[in-house]
Image (cartoon, rainbow, N blue to C red; front, side, top):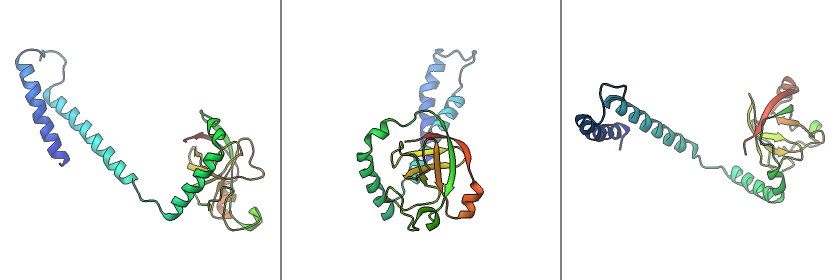
Amino acid sequence: MSIVNIIATASIALNSIVQPIIAEGVINTNTQTNTKEEISKDFAQEVSQEKKEEIQEEKEIVPKTEQEIKNDEILAKWKAKQEDKWKNLPEDKFTVNASAYTAAADECGWNTGITASGIKVEEKRTLACPPEFPFGAIIEIEGMGQFRCEDRGGAIKGNHVDIYMETKAEAFEFGRQNLVAWVVK
């Protein structure tokens, strides 16, 4: 049923309910109350919002690639091993000292792009976190977006995180910044 048909049907239904009430004098039309039109409009906006949410949910359902399925399997194994770390994640916002890294051999010792968790690095997703954070934890970094803890590093301790970037030029441009972050899940 189209949204127009739903709204029209709802408007007719509301009229059949509201009209007799007004006619019986239950609603004092001289006071500041919602008119039939206002009620119909409110209902239409509510139905419209619900429809928008349904459309958004449909858009979010995107089939996973084979690599994403493999990554989910890897992270599921880590989740079982790191159960206690999930319980101790910060609940409030915190400041991170963020820097950037690449998968270049001179930085990592090899250039395969395979992280400490076993997942291949990906720009705008991979984050090297301190050992207190479990692999798979999603961290929102204000102004940067959401990243997933997938890697570790010798200098990654305390509030330091390393954001994976594709090129050294991007990493050098990013430098080191103190940013607000929080755990999404």
